[in-house]
Length: 360
Image (cartoon, rainbow, N blue to C red; front, side):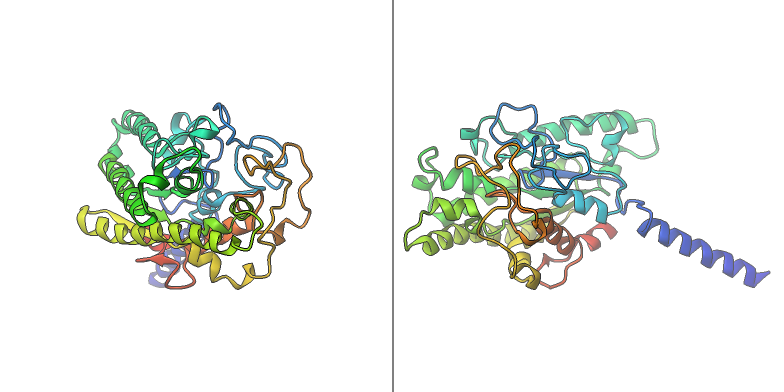
């Protein structure tokens, strides 16, 4: 009888293991997302803005077609949700309702920035401060749902993962647009990075006060290397210097963000922050080196850098890094998601990756 009991326990453990990893039982109860167009999955669709992508050829490789995702298929959050075991995509705040908010909400907005004025030249956008206000609405709703249960909302939220990927627009649609914004005349690149990181620190602390305890914060990519910024630099001999100037400014922000993560881990009780090194992940990937990186896959508007509506994109999309002039193709998003989830190099994530964050 003893050996039968041992076999039963072994089979039970195996069944539990495979249900968690093969059949999509989430590794955390919910996933909350804050950011910009790299994460937006439909929050801009009903806004008065040029920063919207709910039309073809966007979504050409996505099961539901054009949804407001700024790419040809899944974005980084979609892939992260799948890696974490969710059986469906995290709903955008614009559409989230009822009990589905218990698995998380995506608040990200194309054009959204750390600073409230960022990207206003494009029209409406949902800044990080507004996203925090929207999250407060969600938390109040969750409190009502969980109020009569054994778990309080605070206990529930403490086990969820909060992904924050924001700051790109504060450069592309603010600092490096001097005809619309004064920031580059007020701050040096070093000063601006400090200002942005300080404001983001306050915003992350606000999330902590709402109940967040597990944070995955993505650093900026090489902004100057996008087709849009390359084109903005002009065709002169100083294009390389222009690209380096933008990339160096973004790297100052990333350096500060990594230090901020260490500081918040030290100062906020029971909170864990990790930094995902987007620039390092892309630059160290041998598979990306042979891909087309200087032109987008779709025909783009010279004003916005977004795909021209109903245009015919390239057919070999798996060979392109950029879908439009600003946003990655699904294959690059997959790289950011997979190596953020499970680091392949010590430099991919600090102090550890999302897999370890989920286990806490």
